[in-house]
Image (cartoon, rainbow, N blue to C red; front, side, top):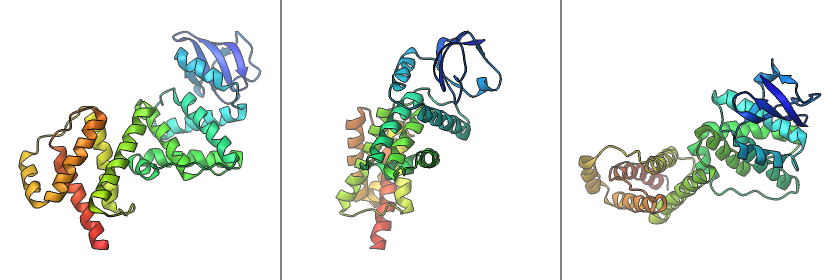
Length: 281
């Protein structure tokens, strides 16, 4: 049985939980008319979100000092929709992290301040499902608040969603996204070209780079490819040499060993991309 301990506002309640002791419950209208000691059950009990971590609880309570109730309610509805979309429970930190981030982003938009995101394209390519979910979330806020959330901000929302889905720290995801962007810039600089971001080979390269960075960071190494490595070294020496430069960058940034097999996949992706770009010139 979950019982009300304290009503913070119409949408947020402190409650006693039989398993987690004190929890913060979040749901539209959940606190309306509630009194301490009342039981929360039935249909409403299926629609609230519980913050079980004491640290998350305190951080969330601090949000209530400056975030309006309507914003909290809308955020709760959207997080519920995200869990339904992905058929997965999200890390509870999204209630704190995304609420805080988006609230201040909206304030900047309302003041006419520009939001820049240098890693937007890499983010969209790396996490396409999360990006589409972020687009829908932005549309809901645009309609409710009569604003227009720009694409750059949608990219940041995407990272928050991916973080909550994968239980990965947002700062780690940001570092990986930045690294992928720098690797692409290195390829462009090396060949003196500007890659067409709509090229299918660019899409494949970025997705591969994201997967490679995550594999290395998680020490989930690829199988040995020594035979193919020697063939590629002879066939595509320029792309092969660049792949080793990129691997060195990854190794320095991630502080993890990058296996030789990564040179095979990188060489092939670079060769396809560069060949496609040179044909289109």
